[in-house]
Amino acid sequence: MKKMLTIFMAALVVAAILICGCTGDSTTPPTTVATTEPTAEPTTEQTTEQTTAPPAEKDIVETATEAGTFTTLLTALDAANLTETMKGDGPFTVFAPTDAAFEALPAGALDGLLANTTELSRVLTYHVVAGKYMSTEIAGMSSLTSLEGSDLAITTDGGVKVDGANVTTADIECSNGVIHVIDAVMLPP
Image (cartoon, rainbow, N blue to C red; front, side, top):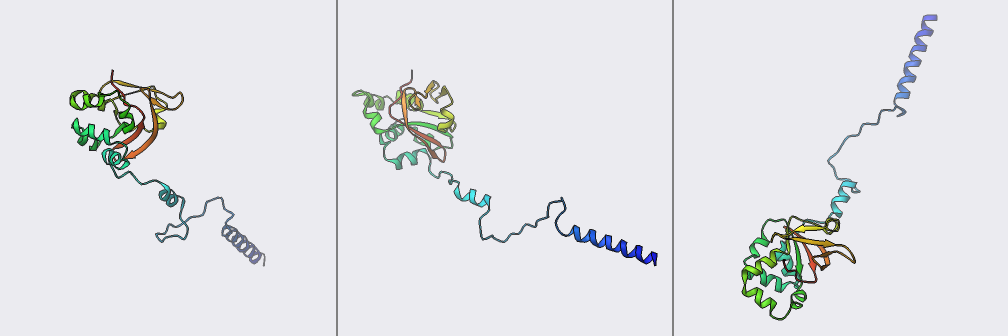
């Protein structure tokens, strides 16, 4: 009888252990099984993918053309045989003067540049930096080196300025870089 009671008690202890082990009170995290079926609600990863902007599809020249405010810059790029370069892989950061910026040049200055493609090329490459620099990066810098070879001074008093030209619109992303619109034509030293 004592032996039967011991076996009964042992069986009761084993049953209690098994029952407690199945209630989820264990410190081991539950195992989950991944499924490939779609869920009714998007996961965090799906939500992030849905809100992330798609990569830019147009290059710098196509983006500038579509904007409609850079016709003089595009004409100058053509005259200096730089259009294909600006359509290339890059990446490039372009400080792009608007048509109004070119109109603000002294009388005859633009015509003089268009007639002298060597000097025109110097001026245009002075507006371009190798690499893609967004405005948040530029704001923390004191200078960038242009493709022309000279440094562009960057200041942030009263807004971001590049060689004295105000950045009026920043971070226009392109497939081969970024455009920052400026309100003046910068001239190399």
